[in-house]
Amino acid sequence: MNAASIAALARAGAGITVEVVPETGSTNADLLARAPALAGPALLIAENQTAGRGRAGRSWLSSSEHSLTFSLAWKFDGGPQQLSGLPLAVGVALGEALGQLGVQVQLKWPNDVLKDGAKLAGILIETQAAPGGGIWAVIGIGLNLVMPDEMEARLGRSAAGAPWLARMERDVLMAALLDALAETLRLFARQGFGAFCARWNLRHAWQGETVVILDNAASGNPVVLHEGLAAGVDDTGRLLLDTLDGRITVLAGDVSLRVKT
Ligand code: ATP
Picture 1 (cartoon, rainbow, N blue to C red):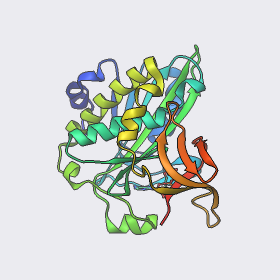
Picture 2 (picture 1 turned 90 degrees about the vertical axis):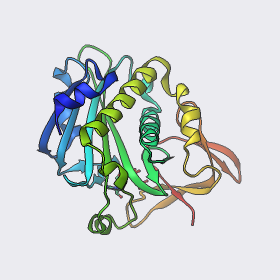
Picture 3 (picture 1 turned 30 degrees about the vertical axis):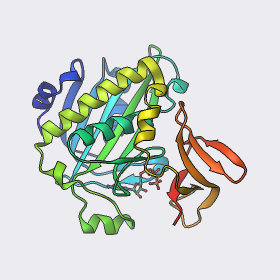
Picture 4 (picture 1 turned 45 degrees about the vertical axis):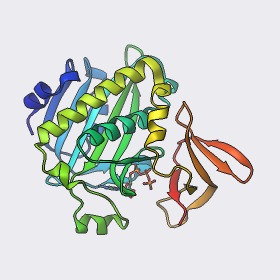
């Protein structure tokens, strides 16, 4: 991939520094380390990411041939409360951009992009106070272009690829995603998640389905915290769940959602 060509192709990318590295552990870790010295928004793409991260110390698997792994550092005014719903807004940006490229996806609360019910992309946002005030959000995205059987076996659960995207010129795909993200982050800075709530709900994967909210989902010992019908999200990005005791709202924290089978 080529940084100059991505920057030239991305119409909304003005003022965003673009860098491509052949390999790194985690693009999120790299940008978090650099954040204090960044003069403006920065996109870091790794051709190969060897220690990709998910939430709560989980890992994100990728390969140089079959995945897109990148992070975008963006500075917001205000404090962490300003960022509630940001992972969901980023999901909307990805969902709409992929839809325009011909790949229809759905969103799973709080931070996943699904294709045919399986995870196609993951979003991990990590933050850091900016030295002069405000907050840096480092938005990490891993997108599967192809999902080889061997990787699915390592994951131990089904995951999706998008062969159609794999056939696209990578720089063109990356520029389209950067455009969508830059537009989203600018709107989010002005209006917060309220501007994205209806758009998220339109793509909600499990609307009206019975779901469970789990603590420790990845462990051998998950605990069911709630069960109910998924009713979308509110304008701060909380999940609305219709339980036997009535409607409740669930904060993202570190809980995981599973459709009840
Ligand atoms: P869950 O998917 O269990 O609800 P989560 O959404 O919080 O959890 P993340 O922490 O965002 O998941 O992502 C890490 C998880 O995603 C890993 O635990 C693994 O199950 C899964 N995963 C890792 N790499 C990939 C990949 N390339 N494609 C699809 N899923 C992946």
